[in-house]
Length: 228
Image (tube, rainbow, N blue to C red; front, side, top):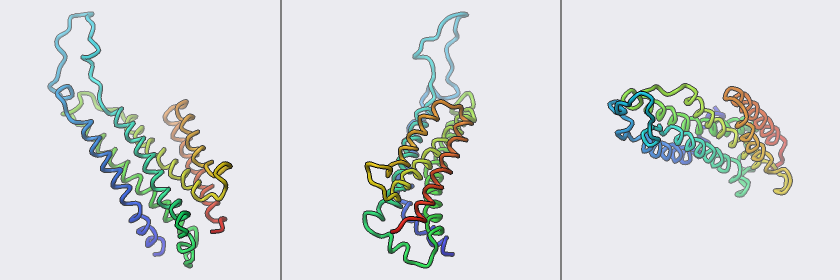
């Protein structure tokens, strides 16, 4: 019961940020998917002569690539905002003592915080991405079904948001100096972005999972050993 009580409290604190990111993604994503005449099923190219070329302005580009970039920005932004709300604000306001004075174990408190962060990211970004992908994949919108890889790419962006959430949370819990290793978690997350660009999608998923586990373990150890 203590865990679920803490989880509800953390979800209430994360709710404004998750709702804001979800609304932003839903509104902008829907505008990008607004069905112009070039996307409708009845749209056809004019009859082309054999071996004739097609002008570049006649080619149709679907907007899912732009939405993918928006998902990436919002996932990273929401991850950073949630970590600041959960781990940095308590440092600035001195509320860690009030949070930890109860008989509840530290492991339960940290588990509730991280669970709330993950739930907020998955529901605020992941579920909206599922809706936008479904909307863009309707028969009356696209002539050719969108690939499953594109759907996986969106969830990979959500995973990157989780990684930045843990990296920023680790930085918030660290008591090291700013000019030493305090921002190591965020630096590690940024460095992982570079490695993802040089790998295939399934290897990037494996690397992302390893990075999340590493940051989670470091965050767990830092929180349990820290003197607040």
